[in-house]
Length: 302
Image (cartoon, rainbow, N blue to C red; front, side):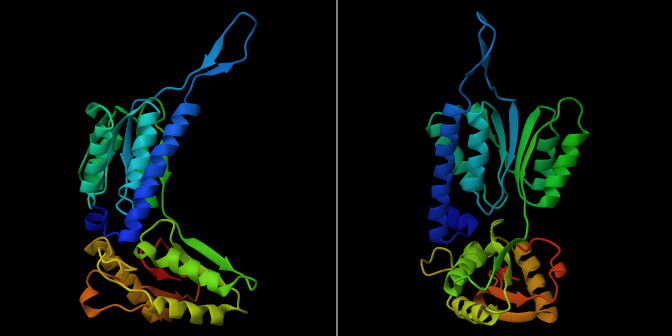
């Protein structure tokens, strides 16, 4: 399902499954410790105890790039804290979410505690966030959408509804002249191009000291030339497809713009039959960092 819906390579799919398991174990451990009743100091003859309890219904809105791990982390955290959950997975990956919910039910979770809500972000996501019964929102996605949710929650009367948001950014690596070029290039290739760069943790900006820049760029170009783009179910594939046509179009436009305005440093190979679904790993030297206005969610290194 992760390969079919999320276009994950097999290696990335295994890694994500492990991450989902880690989330389940982590929050189970948190429930057994942090959520246990705690005795508090008090006057002689008086017993005081601190107990934490659920808030009510949590809305959990998760993305397509980690359709199992992030979905599982949000949902399980809310559940172990004593809440019920209305979970909205990304439109692109509904079957992965449904399979995980089935596993939770198989493990003993009552079906009424967790409701799986399929639909679009602008329509269904907005309706869930605005519902008067919502006691908390957990969201992973773009910064713009997170700010929209924040404003919507602030409009409501009554108690403040907490928002837990994980959003995008432009992750940078700074390499000084003492760093090992081989180690840097290996880390750059893994971070910038694994998952076709479709991670909020992916490397977007590489800052190189001028004393070592030329050598590192030459080595990076050689490493990128060895990357293989292809079908995610093929074990030989390093870089899988972009999630959908809309995302592909945005990335293709960004690459086209940089090709005209920046210096092309390296580009990985891409077979002609893959141009409609894949973006070749590519690296550009920018004239000014201010040219990057927003997160670039694909295999593009600046």
